[in-house]
Image 1: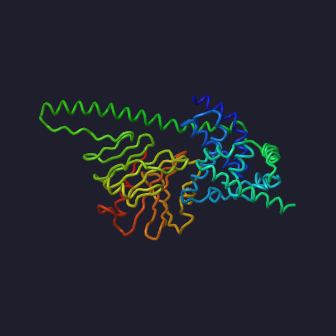
Image 2 (image 1 turned 90 degrees about the horizontal axis):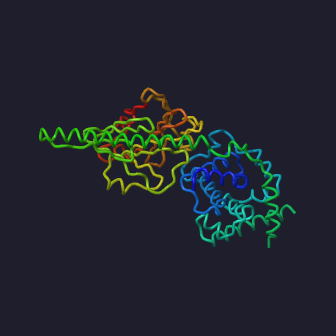
Image 3 (image 1 turned 30 degrees about the horizontal axis):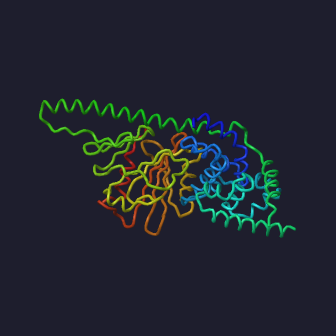
Amino acid sequence: MTAERWAELYRLEFPRIYRALLAVLRDRERALDALHDAFVAGLRHPPAHDADLAGWLFVVAVRSTRRFRRLPLLPLEWVTGSSGDDEIEAALDRMEVGRLLAGLTERQRAMVVAQFYLGLDHREIARHFGVKTGTVSATLAQAKARMRAEVRNVS
Amino acid sequence: MFPELSIERIFHREIDSLPLPPESAWIPNGLRARRSVPLTALVICATAVLVFGAVITVRYAGDAAGTGRRVTTPLVALPRPTCLRGGCNVYRNDAFGYGIVLPADWRVAPARRGGTPPSTELDHVEFTGQTSDEWTHLVGVDVVVPWDLVVEVHERRGVLAMDWSRVDGCGLNPCVVGETRLSQAPAYTASWAISPSLRMHAYYLERGDRMLILRYVTGPGTEGPHAVTERTLQEIVGSITLD
């Protein structure tokens, strides 16, 4: 895949993946940085199939945000003095989906968004995240149970 | 059971309403350009080194044939730009604009295995005085080998040296900070415990849109293998020259 073709496909998918990342990360800067990292990763090693592009971009971006966590580092927001993206947090908290996702771990959010927003099935999520299908099913079952509990609490 | 179809509709309706950044920010144009420059420079440097090495070898070989001297060709560790040992123990990194003087028995350690470098990292070179066997047994993922010296080059992304040191761990632990000059450039220094017996020492130099970091870990004890001390490491750090 040429760099031009990659940029073209990336642009087509950008709105969907960026919004999915916002729902997971709840921070515009982190979402944009993560997607930029995924773009660069794709320039170096593009995904094997165009059809997998959305899932590939999403998972590579989510993983890139975890690189910093693997090191014994402070979150960047501690450094800049910011406590996150208040505007996006508020927007998500006004949404039914945003409130449901807020009660989940970041990993659960990523898988829930991959399933319900990006339309990936359990097998595709497992392949992209590099885990077993059973792990995806268990993670999603836990996430759904939490969301159900949240719905019950609200009602 | 969750009504999944309606959930999908709600997800689309709500998440699709989240704002997008301006289209000009979608593709990291600058990032791509910045990353290609060091790569190009590296290729040019490597080519220059090969040509230079070939010329020198041919000349030495010609001289040796005339005088009967033994010929020693320069040791060039590619793809690193130049790393000459033996008679010359100066490591030059032309791609990232620095040179450093190493003790004669030091060498460039093999590239790290496993682990994912931080997304900002452009270059990472580890210098070691330990033998291959010693080093192989010590190294692990995301570990700085005690008594080795690491030189990293990162995209700075506007982060100041002091803030970078906090991200590295200085803020999480009691940290001794200070300022010094390396090759006449101001450097921010930080030192903090990373375990009860190990201590990280780091020097941060802001170089335009890049951050040059020299770091080493001391301990346990005051002396490492092959009589390397903190003084040895400080001298190596102090020998750095910046383009």
